[in-house]
Image 1: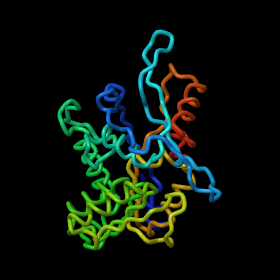
Image 2 (image 1 turned 60 degrees about the horizontal axis):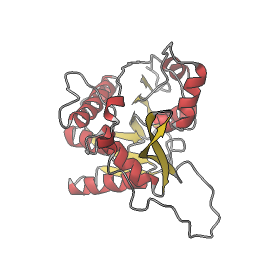
Image 3 (image 1 turned 120 degrees about the vertical axis):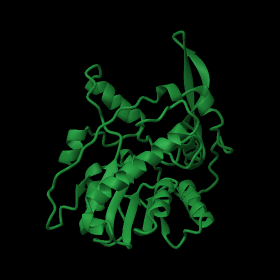
Length: 285
């Protein structure tokens, strides 16, 4: 989290805040139930040549099987990964709300209904307050323009625009998942905010905008999906105005002494994490 280095008054300092939270207790059969897609078997019908991508297919946890005496959940392939991914995030990270982030848990009880959604919202608020502390010259403005990179369902952007309507004039939600983008568009329309929320289907590694467009580049738990962090960070700074800020939170590789380099690599491979960096490497990048 840092001011735009292109700014004349930028210090280049990076604010790094680490936290730990273990979600294994929430990955239960109850919370994973109902994540089946209606089109659970993929049957290609088009003869048009297609370039395979990471989003074309996805494995979802299925029925239990016995492995060496232990019950394991067996993955199987589904046809519409965007739809099931949205259901998964909503169930596991958002209590079926549109907030699907890991969250800030100060003073919250994870066992209370709606806790995950409230924690996600708390993290969004915390990041926004941090952002504005980096932009003291814009705190009293009424035309702050920001972009949410990897915006998911648009919940964070819609929340911030609604809460800070006197400050934020426009938010751009940039995201690859069509299912999530459709939800963001529908929610913005329901709340009569379509003139202040733009939803763009694109990659944060190739942001389709000119440089120096936004006061703030913002991202919450999204860069874990990036193919290359360096490209993403460079793109975020490129579209941020001189004197603006780039603030994000993300999942990063830890330094658990009980895990080997090979185990960390296996985790990254199984979870399709291409650029698995620890906080020090992120700062260096």
